[in-house]
Image 1 (cartoon, rainbow, N blue to C red):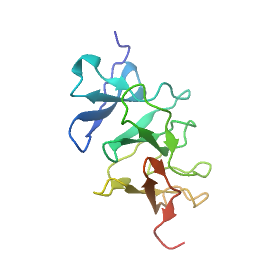
Image 2 (cartoon, rainbow, N blue to C red; image 1 turned 180 degrees about the horizontal axis):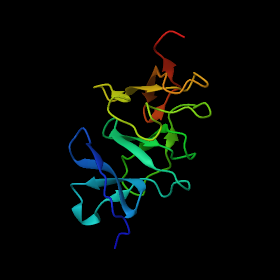
Image 3 (cartoon, helix red, strand yellow; image 1 turned 120 degrees about the horizontal axis):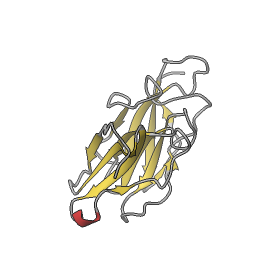
Length: 167
């Protein structure tokens, strides 16, 4: 039985419509994890994407870049530092450890608030091999002044980000 009382859900379909990824606090109240439900294997139920999170860490956003790579946003590695991570989901659960999609400066965050990620913070290319995001990673002490960055993938590995707007 779950100890969660506030089942808040953010969900996304895989491009081939065979899986749903979602974030929810279904196990512990206010502890948000990512899960994948495979429609071809309903008896397995929803499978947690990450084995664990740091104390007070949460998954804030869940997306599919393509059918093999899920993108998670949140303070997954360091509490209160919101980053994007790529997870190879092609082999099913248990899933491998996430790969950080960029180097984040201390106290930099994806998006506006640092406590959530919305559709306006990350955009995915139709080809399923690149994404853009906004962050304050290169602007020390300038909370809320985001810049745009592009991340391309070599297969399942993210390349370093490229700043799109002028320095």
